[in-house]
Image (cartoon, rainbow, N blue to C red; front, side):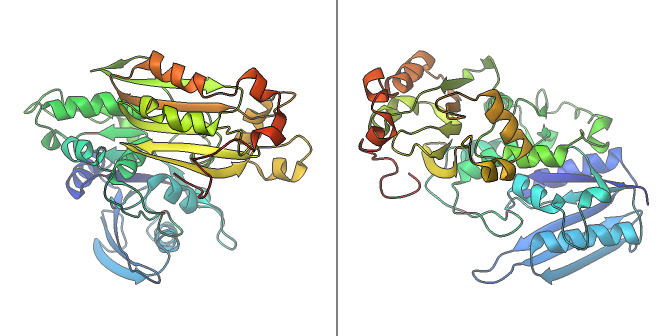
Length: 395
């Protein structure tokens, strides 16, 4: 059986998701559309509704619902399509309450008895449609919380800002449909911000309201790059290569800060007002002297910052941990290895508007241990006050 092609489409509103789906189907008119909604419950599995339509579907139009694990249900649908209709191309349209990247990882993960979805489908580029007005409102909203479907379960509570940033960061192509843009400052501001949040994605926005839609490239309905599933998994690792873009536009830019000595948690806490000024998005990992064995992840969206112990640093003698780590993690650890401190290092990318880069760098550098503090060793470091992670795993 030849492989099919699977496109995944998401959007921050149902309208833009539908507009992007329509444009993909114009590129691939014989594709089958599998549109999904997930109705959550406080306890137990959700209800997963699916709507199937397209020229090569067994039934031209069919709606079905089931209660259970969303990934298991979607895998069954996709495998059934290959066994019956064998469509050359399936477009999977996901609702806005899905965390796209972890769901994709779970969807492609090999299962006992059924293997990997990659045996039946090649992944096409992940396409995300965005309504700029909704996005700009969400990216500044940190006083509400929501939970996204990750594939296995719902996520921990997230702010709308975090959810909005994750959706754009998951995309291979970000599209603003013509009817979602009025040529306003909001669209231009979103485009400048999206280019920084996901410098690897194709970004398509209308030049101005009323202009014809830009034609989508045919590559969006072709097989994606080799090793896409492994790349998705690697991007969820606590230690990874930060994605940053040099330069910027419309006063939007990114700063990459790196250091190979531990941070003093109390001085870092004091520096946060300076560091976070103007920051819209921040991602990376830290080496805190108070937690010398722990990888501490930095994740911020809008004004909300979360610091979390997410993993342990690899040690040269810990063969079990090395074998359990992903190939990318092992490669990065070997590349950055230090004879005294192993893979330990600080790396964060901060994206924002009118960032005072020199001031931010100076504040972070001042939070590093001094030579005298460094000479105390790990036993001495752990005695320093830690207002960031002293009583909880996140701040």
